[in-house]
Length: 516
Image (tube, rainbow, N blue to C red; front, side, top):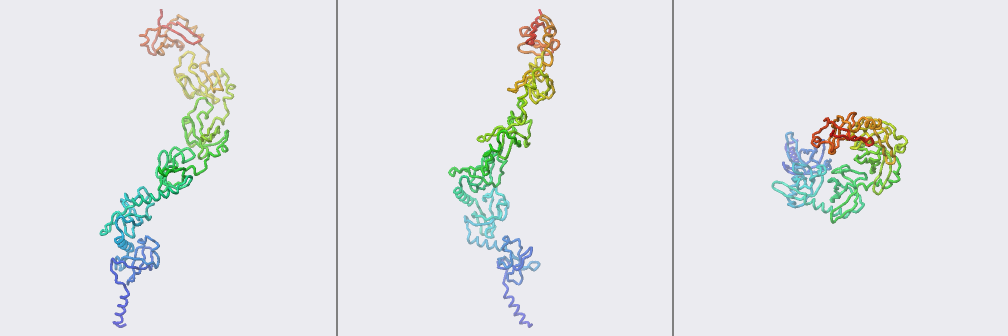
């Protein structure tokens, strides 16, 4: 080939190539795609390269697709033509913004990332800053905000510095008002709607229905008893609720959750007739009884008086444990009041029916001391029934002020049956009756006028109790002792006393310190 022909061909080839420079935006088409880069033909002598990370819209990343790119470097260290799709979009975006956008204008943008103090928003390829205080996104999870398209208002624009500040606060209020008006027009009683739990109090939960807040009261959450709304819902939960009532003028909406499912009380009489035996779970324990869940939404009360045939009331908190199953009998159902009365003792034979036959008067029997009162002690007998020993039936000779002075809790004791009243469920027991009455013999040992030594037991307002021989107690009447002497006496002191009265029937001895 001659030198002239070669020169002509080079000039012809050069004329077909674009005259490009760095910073210029040109059109090109994708001719190859690798894992990291897209190869772009822009009509230059060599093809250019764009990182695939710049293709936020993956629909643009396909063979033959025409795109605009910015020429970053005509020839890098490796001799490659480096292009940028995102920078081309940003330059074109700013050209559009500078031409068409002013402060207070409304623009459409996509939230692309969260940064310190707010969010970055893509507006036609231009990144604008959305301060958190102007975003109306406070409280929303970032994942619910990112990549979504919203309308924004231009709060401030500096075209020279290419600085764009956005706000959504006023637009959000207008959008919410529009949604609220639309929602109020759509609401109807007995309508099901989906909402988001936005707040929880002791009396219920507030549900955002999409612009209108409604109250789901604790009594409308479940057919079963609950102690706190947090047992049913949590903040952020999306739940389906029923519109029970609403008042647009006062912006009030009453919601129901339990009403969505059938009321378990509707066929309560058929499901749980009186006398039927069931197994339920203990869900609450109170001093007066135990609440038993017999199915979801249905609870009954096992009153403390229905736990045992014993006359003395038991403490349910000492006998039962939350979550445990228990077998009970239905004794009454009241659908209107939503109350079911349960019993445990009805599952057992009533021991009181045969109590008078099995516990005849004067029978000696063993039992265990279960508790005390000021006036006696309760003893659980072998039959499971409970009787009481009155303090007056504990000793023939001692004045018993405290039952614990004679008996010890949980200890076995032998007693005598003094009386049985099945109708009133009462058994009277005696301890002193196990031995013969010593008072006829005491009267012989302590004739009136006899002077003996005594030990002070108790100093009271109406006299001084003293102990004679054989642990027999006597009373020094206040009129039979000097007041100053009586005031100085204490338990254990010794006295010389004279027998002035012996009453065998009342089991009392009266003595005097006046010996002459």
